Image 1 (cartoon, rainbow, N blue to C red):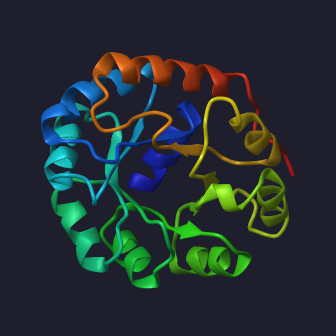
Image 2 (cartoon, rainbow, N blue to C red):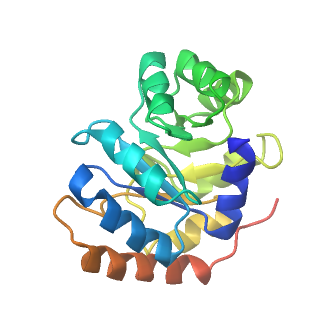
Length: 213
């Protein structure tokens, strides 16, 4: 089950690589660098060039990683991700139809939320974790407050503005992990650039500890 694979990947390294703007021709090299750095969760947003091709390529190249799509806004897009071999569906918002279809297809669902109302609705629909987005609008205190009322074990994953320099506070508040976008990869970055940024982020998260509640 992909949910089990997701939990195992989060235990190994609680970071999701968000490769917005990735082109299929670069997917293999970037994916291999990230996997070597410890990343087991890789997301290609659907507003990237030929994202389904990149997802299919990464799934073939990195079978031990969990590869999927971000910016998935409709149930039809979730089906397209499944057809490309994706195992992970991430969205900037909570849409019940997307979550339900993602779960029906056997993929892991991480919808975007900002409020407790959205969080509880997403979990009721079957979401496996919650993407707190955009994290710039929230704070570690928000994560701590949400976790005080959400079901024990709920994975809250801040995304947006997360860097190696600021993730410690979020982690101490109970964040299960993080999605890393431009602080990890920008269109045009080569493998060497991504390797250096990945190393800094992996080192930073390795010195933190998730808070308890």
